[in-house]
Image (cartoon, rainbow, N blue to C red; front, side):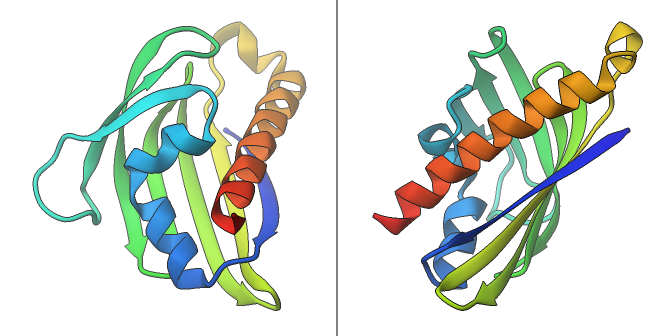
Length: 142
């Protein structure tokens, strides 16, 4: 596993940021690589909810992920595919001056030859995730 984290402050109340993140159908609005996200399990969003999403970058793919932690206004965690990689993605939120501090940690499982290029792959994915999080910030602040 390789792990990285991005942190940013969003000028919106923590309740609003969590609600937007917890509605995973919003992901295509701020993640340039995802074209669609749909809930495929019954019931309200919570631990055990599953989603199917369509990815266009780096190559077209359909991915499934599951919500593994759901603590309103504090923490969301999902487990599934992130492109080619099995991953665990967490969002930790806390109130901060001016809004909400969002920490996004990602654990990627690099396999095969990609393990040898771990520092390069990790840096590229971290940069792409940072750009997506900035798009999320801009979207929520407007």
